[in-house]
Image (cartoon, rainbow, N blue to C red; front, side):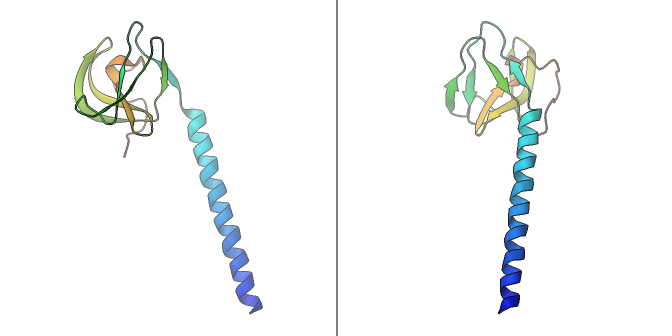
Length: 114
C-alpha cells in the first residue's frame, strides 16, 4: 500500500511538471508575438475564418494594431498592401486579411495555423 502512494505522488509531480512546461511554452510564444499596424485609414473586418464568406466577428477601429499568432491560406483579397491569400490569426477564431496588415513581407511571417 505504501508503494501505491509513492506512485501517486510521482504521477502528480510529473503532471505538475508537464503543466509548468506547457505554461512556460505558452508564455514564450506570447512574448515572441509582435503587434503589426492595420493600414492607416481602414477599419478592418475580423472574420471567423480565412475568407470573406466566414462570419463577421467584429470590426477593428482606425489605427489598430494586431498580434499575428499564426497564418493560414484562404481567399485572395486585395488591399492597401497588395493582393494576398494569407490570413492572419489575431485571436482565437479571429482572422484578418494580410493585405490590410503591415507585416513588412508579402509572405508568411508567422507559423501556419493548424
